[in-house]
Image 1: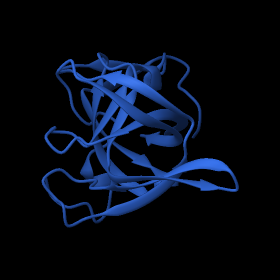
Image 2: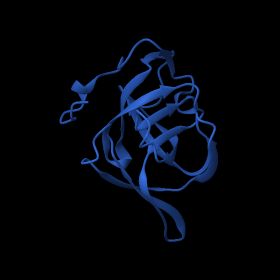
Image 3: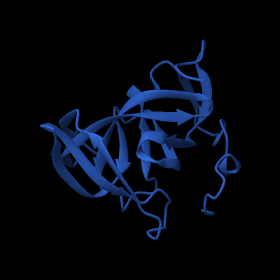
Length: 156
């Protein structure tokens, strides 16, 4: 199912999502209404050009506390933006656009690439990605599916 629900769908403050074009079958995301843009933990970010178009290649550790699982992904760069994190630090980040899957829904979102090694979640799903699709239940988790929906996912 693509697009958005007819009425806002209730999701938890954390949800399992997928980033299929980046070959990330599952990653635990913090649903963060305080963050405008979504962010993905990445490392070894490398800018290159493909037929003149700017591209970025990067590594991802999709599971918290697991550095043995590595996914190498690439995507076109859509922008570079200054982002202020929750600690007040400003950083210039690459921005990519890629489909995200949450429950039965898939749609394109912008994601900034940054090192989140010291953060609890490898992915933040920001409010611009959610739009009017979802309402967040701050006391609930995994309302659109837990780990059982992701075969082969390591235990947290």
